[in-house]
Amino acid sequence: MFSYLKTKISEPKIANNSEENNSNLVETVSEATETLEWKELTFDLIRHIRDPEKPETLEELDVVQEDLIEINPLLNRPGCFQIIVTFVPTVPHCSLATLIGLCIRTKLEQDLPVGKFKIDLSIKEGSHSTAEEITKQINDKERVAAALENPSLKSTVDDCINNCTE
Image (cartoon, rainbow, N blue to C red; front, side, top):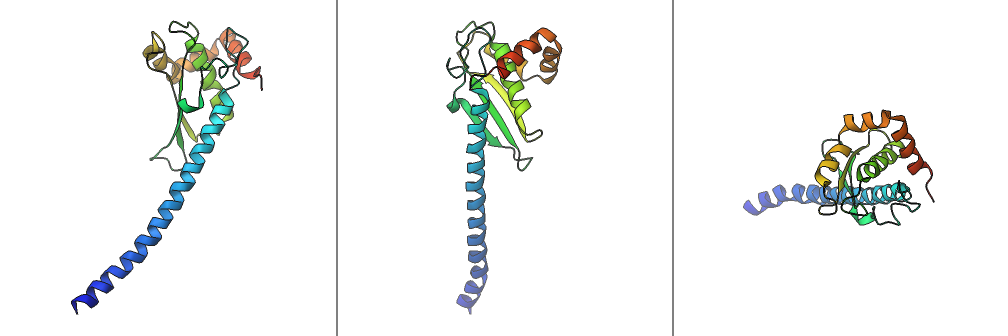
């Protein structure tokens, strides 16, 4: 009798666990594929942004690199993702690091589906003398909005992101 109960109790759990595990595996693979696709798209969008001072692109100057882009699912918003772009200014005292961050953010916000992403930008640790302060600025929505109200700054950002050398 004990073995009969043991079998009856464990059978449904095995079947459900197997189905549940298969379903979780499919979801995980699907999520991983989607994450990789968004990572590639994100890099493709920002790689051709022109540096504000030089004729080269951010990719040519190694300011943006695909391996410094991270895509994470937002657990509290199914189907939505956090994009983390870490960039490396050309020199540790680069005066245009904030402008480069503003260009990256603007390009992503213009070209990615609205509401699907939370964009976080950062300067790679140790690559700039004021990395922490600049990272705060380029992730502050009010500061970004205020900066883009400046016609001269908006024009510079537009030139950098629209005159891409694709």
